[in-house]
Image 1 (spheres, rainbow, N blue to C red):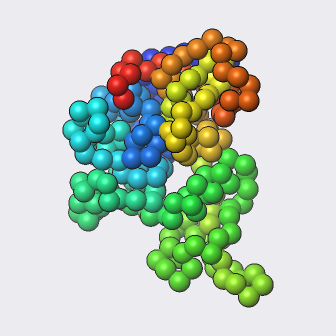
Image 2: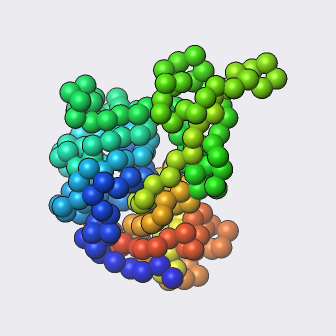
Length: 230
């Protein structure tokens, strides 16, 4: 059974130097309370795996939304993802050599995480052939199958996955609301430690079995969100 802890306790479980997967899309669907606790903790030198660099000026009124806080403060020093355009500061830090960035096409990123969770040796995709993607440290090689060129991309795993669910029961079973699901289900399979932030914590049985997307067996800890406006 997943253990219920505070956001501060969750942040203490993330060692400096960790690779962390952040569920969310421009930080929509992110584990906001845990991210804020990380910002207020001693953790540093984090490499983040997420779709994008989040944004400045969040819908919750914050100056930096989601993991943009960690980029701004310098706690996140590496970023593996698909998009930088929503956060000009992240691009500036990248250009200044203060943020190491590895850009991967979004679909490839999703499948590489899925491969990491399923124990596969990688994925084969035509996306990125003939582009700078071939130079990525996460590209194994180019191969040809039936006359068509493909890239073999390495699987991605992390030390920690931080995800968020609209409803999470006390066993850790997760239901996501709409598109807040994004990368979270596959990230929950591709990390050594999985922490889910529950927007609403419910009793076991309140989520219909067919609505459970991430089963509780994959979840190590639950944090109940206090700031519901996130």
